[in-house]
Length: 627
Picture 1 (cartoon, rainbow, N blue to C red):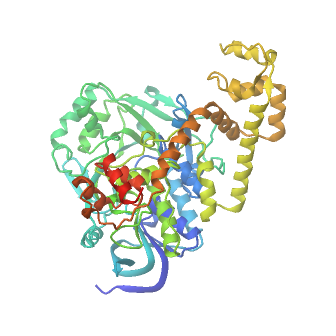
Picture 2 (cartoon, rainbow, N blue to C red):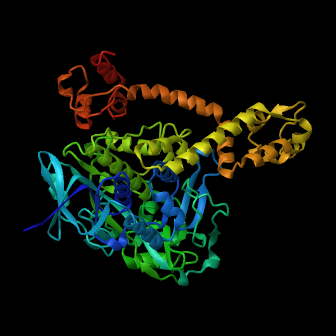
């Protein structure tokens, strides 16, 4: 084929305009790199192709971290939310996770508008089928339409489109998602350059027509009236808020679903890729949990005014007629009409152990992978990878050191370290349990942890940074006040009695009382005229009050966790040469030599987290390093 060579040299090319690609393109462009965003379909930019929601357990923390660094997912989610909830309120603050339902069409439109309004950013509709390399570095890409574009660095964010195959019962056909083509040729091109690809699968449930749902048989789940949202910029929602609804499967539903097992692509072996362990299809759930009589299903609105409802918990690749028959036995869905059947999709991904912590590939210089191409699942996991890839590609071409977030600093750091150190053999999803230091990595303090870094690298504006410093100063001053001043027994005892907490006989510091689990800072404010006056004179908002209460109540836990994190960080300070020949170190175990040669860790801390590396192997490395 004769390719049209475009003479304009970009700094960075981003391939794919999903959640990873959008964040990557915005980061690169806002940092000053001339950026080209290539997408198969300009009208489906940042499309919420699975559930119409952002955030959730651990994922909400990631979204707040993206925002704290200067990304855009939180801003777009807040502008297009149709419901907000803070999950896990009954647990400790380390577990609190914000989540929004979103209008999927307005979410995509808002992202498109932001991209189109950004300086240094061009958008082009085309499909990349090959990367162009020279001297072991990527220099550009070739497209399906016969064009060649050149850049100093390239970021691949291809999602589920690489050799994607859609399965519905015994039917299967090529597609990156229903109604859209797959990408052919790019996997084979990367394989020829030495990259190892594997297969994964994910699925999505049917969408139903809300006009055919009997809502009177469903449990209503309203959102919170006090909407805090994701972004620290405090963006008020523009759309009307809507409820979700809950129903349940039953033994009759399960019996119908089992009828389709002989035509299931999963059970009959037509799907070779491994699916997500923590988001199984409904047929997988009733097979794995055969003794369970019912499973919960959430009906989630997909837009502010549309008729589509997403059946969260009913993902399936069974034949459409089985899906319909089973749905009609679920309370409230007896007459439901399917707008789009559930389906599974199988696609290529590349083992993320082939990446450095910067998300640059080890095989090809200036080439970055981000998102589901690395084996992750979820919009939020993809978006944070895109953000970091965009930052680091820009820094690489400007001869700056990469930004690598530690496990102690962020969920983003946990996610990337897990990927490059442990690899992926099933779709990776973030959970709070993956973070050793989740007491430190709360959703409320993401700006305290990461906004200074976002400002330092150039993604946080001066105005936003100054507002952040004011907030931080207010937090410190309120903590100091609560630790310095006391409240009299006559003021607080009526509250303590009402709360069934021990009354006091002499005045006590506000901070001491706040350590009691039954007492909140708002309780103290309502009981003390002095504290109420101080609060009103200094304009402390809800966000600051909540942050201060957490810091005081959990102060001892936070101190201990910081001490532990500091000790662990010492191993991260000991650098390793990624090109060191471990095969020559016979005092290492055979497994250690193999694993270290494959992963090529850059720090002793990363080496210690590789599966199969023992404490004695770390001791050998310390001796080699003269430690």
